Picture (spheres, helix red, strand yellow):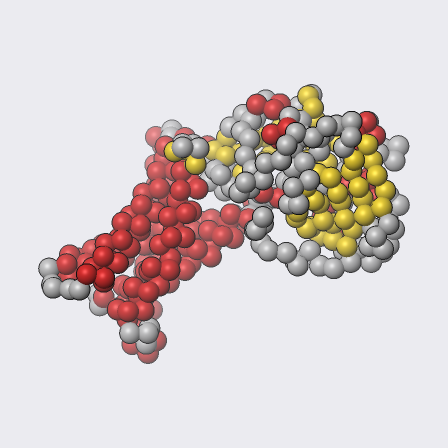
Length: 346
C-alpha cells in the first residue's frame, strides 16, 4: 500500500471523525445516533490504516531529518495515540475523570489539538493532495474494504462488551454513562465552559417573557411554581444527557413554555430564545420549544442552585448544554432559530 494513500486516508478519516463527533455531540435524540455510529466505525478504520502507517513511520525515523519535521511527527503520533486510547477506554472502563475532567472530554480536546497538526503533516507529505494520484479502481476497492473492516471490528467489540458484561454495554447511544437517576438534586452538577453565577434570591427573582414588539410580562416565583395562566404545573420524566459523558433520568416539574406565552401575541413567531442570568442563551424552533418545561423542581424537591434554581429549561431530545440554567428571560422572535452558533461561545 502506498504511503500517500495511507496519509490521505488517515486525514480523510480524521476529518470524518471531527465532523461526526461534532454532530454526535449535539445529537440528543436517538434518531441521530447515526453520527456516533459513523464516528465509532471511523475510529476502527483509523486503527487498521495505522497498521500500514506504523511501518512507514518506523522506516522514516531511521533516515536523517531536520528537527522540526521529526518533532512534529512525534508530537502528532503521541496526540493520535492519546486520542485513540482515550476514545477506546471511555466505553470500556465506564465513567472516569482526571482533575474533574471526564475521559470523553479529554478525548475531545486531544482530538481537536491533533487536527491542525495532522492537516499540515498530510499536506507536506502528499504535496498538496494531488487527487489524480489516488483516483483509481484500486483505491476505491481499498477504501470500501477499509469501511467494511471498520464496521466489522466495531460490531465485534460491541458484542464483546455485552458478552463480558462490561459497563460499556449499559451506556446510552451518545456514549454517556448513567449517573444519579431519580435522585433529586444528587445528580452531577456541570456547566458549559465557566457559566457559574452567584446564588439567586427567589423572592426578588423575576421571569420576563418578551414579545417580538418588545412588550413583556413578568412572573414571580410562586406564580411559576404553582402553574401559569390557570394551567397546573407539568410533570415530565426525561433524560438530561451531558456532553461531559454522563446522563441522568429525572422527574421534572414546572410550567410549559406555551403556558407562559398564551395567548400567542403574533402568528409570525418562529423562534423561542431562553436566556440565563449570565447572558447564556439558546434558540429553538417555536413548534418544538413551546412544549419544553421550565422546571422549578426535580423529583419532589426545589432545584438547587447548581442545577439552575430558581428555574431551568428542560428540553427533551437535546443535549445538556441546551438545558439553560438560571433562566430569567424567554424571548419570542420572528427570526430563524438557526441564527446562532451550533455550540455556545459564552
